[in-house]
Figure 1: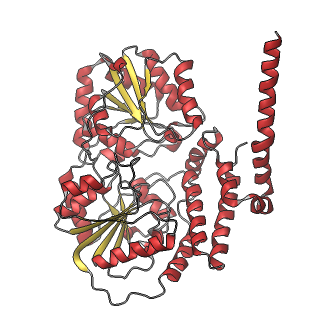
Figure 2 (figure 1 turned 45 degrees about the horizontal axis):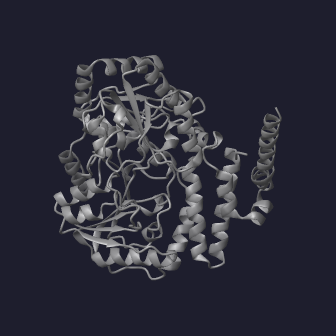
Figure 3 (figure 1 turned 135 degrees about the vertical axis):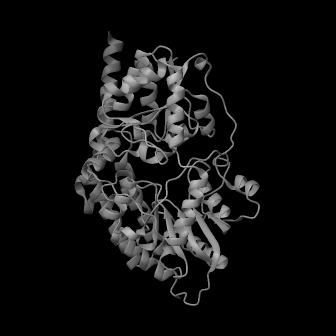
Length: 513
């Protein structure tokens, strides 16, 4: 049984309440844990983009952890700290470190991410050590003791005496409590990569670095930030040097369309993206479609397998997993197709970098020009469509005409901001703390956006009710939200028994015949 959006919001409020109660009882660790869960739920569904009450609670937690205010602080104007939760080669931190060093700043890179064998192929530690030998690196050890880690982060920052702090962080970063008790001599910038989602920390920063007008508008309208706090800095894609791992043998002599990203970006009630993929393959027998994503639930795996088998696409649609050689994947494909209803800025940019033509469809009611916003800085070209007939016509043209593919790919490539332009613009942002942001002329339909995020729950690709139950607990959930508790009991016990009974009846009837 699925939770309604109202149920989800109610669950969020209960978790928030638990965070406040834990704080009042003096249990800071538990309060931070509940804040993490609240932020996780809010970012999954994004009916809000900030929460002032949680920000204020984080400020109180910070004051408790750091009771002694830092007054006599002498920053080194040439030193910068970059704090990074991701520690991944394919996100944004490499661009910023490179630009800071090219502008003659001394940089300390701090990450709180656990570096293990499972993440080693994408983490950037070895790359940073080999590429920038003068870069200082600190890794905050993993620990269940959140307070200990918060203190370690502050100690590392203050010991370096920076004048600026760059934040490349999660919605519920362990670093956030530190922001509220750093000396005024440190200017704090957040790299707003997840500009379309909820995150915490807005009240603890001085500036956001926005890459498009959509995110800037959200920051202004929903995060409580002032216009003078918004700095405009588009980014460019990076290559991490991983070697090409190859494609399935069926791709030989075929036109290769590649697509991928987080799976939720492909889901709406009409399964628009998947129907477009089906149409492309049925209309074009010379095409093979490669799809890459992280399969995090059995429902996603089952969906992909069912899509292939029901359409007889065993030799036409290939799931190629989560690729560490993502830049090389783009280099070796012919066409990139963006996801829908949500596209990916970094994926689109990698396609543009490799001069690959882009097929992009958006639902008209939630259109936000993400593809053009991520790519079109030196030149403008219309890339995305909201009309399916026009989209499929463009696809046909690209598939049938190799010369057009080449021309179109080169046109899109010329639109990208260059590394040199990025470095120069970052220097100007830091020097003047002023970089005009052009806000969206059209009003954002936040209601439709919230519905869009809810679709993955509505269509049963995630199990939010189990998550809510595990966080809140049986007694508290029953006491504060009996209707949600009843849904959990039904889905956990009664519904499964009904399904098992139906399966038994089916098997019994079949065997009797």
